[in-house]
Image (cartoon, rainbow, N blue to C red):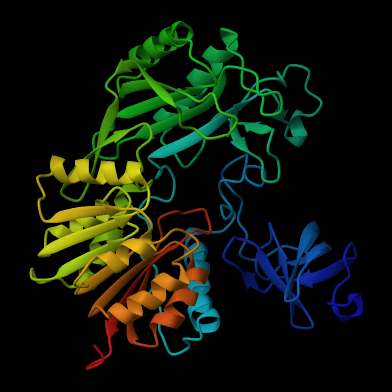
Length: 471
């Protein structure tokens, strides 16, 4: 596109009025119908911005100054809001958060998917809007990001941080004392670990230097039992240095029933290790979704909002409308939690999952709950779908953020199961896939479920019926 054809110039400042919020959390403004995304802004605010990256249909701009604040804005309760990348919408009331999430799903379905005649049901809210996360992952760093009020302090150790990433930085960590998305007990554990490690001189890992001991702190807490697992991820194995910390945690916090050490010697900044050492207690904690109790180890996948996960799965069951004689396929089945729910009312459930470790966990979950009418197929989804015959009566799909591969969507249309239940964590890719499925299916219900208050994330469950006589 020629420079003259861009409505905005890179590096130039503009005064814009924010119209709405987009999936991803950014504000949306327009210059002659050309879309400009501005992070950190709210609807109805007037802002001064500087244009950065430009594309054919949109540009991204950096906020310079808020000239007129949004009437929707409220004071965020967290002192780290605006610096930490965890929460994007703490400065909105929860009522407004739900309103914007609803609008994002509607716009995706109506405009991106071209399905303007489809209504979206009101979002199912979360009962807890803070302290709802059952897992938080914190990073250690030898480079601490300083808040403006900390810049002139001589007492802050700039070579130790335990907290969360500031967006746009890979090697600096914002040191925090508490996160409002986890329980107060978990926050006390965070502070205890931080103080102990500094006091005992346990050195944090340097992302640039690839030297150091401490890499991550992962705290998991059962919503059902209150049990807590503390996972300390280190760059090399040195159990003797961690055993006193494990003892301190179990003596100070009776809820801590598991302390483990994952050792990750690789360069990749991930909170899983090639080896795990049990430091105290058991190697797992237990949590419950509906009638099912799950053993959760340090590296297990588990929905991070337990209470909302149950509401989500109940909605999947309602939309699947099983009567006991159906064969159900569960695509992207993960550790099999949805499959177990479906198996209670299905003749048979077949789960498809590419990750071998997830398939192993799913098989173990089925054995633990003595469910015999479910099986799991590992490997590439496109290949495996063609090898199972006959096809399903009901198909449930819960793909990753990128949605389903187009070949998978088209093959589902060929298979033509009587009902489809689509669970999505990304309204934009959901809309894209529904546009293809709608060639053979009627979209009956679209139900958003808020799993992540204070953020832009939204889950959506969709019920589709094959048009009469088409199969």
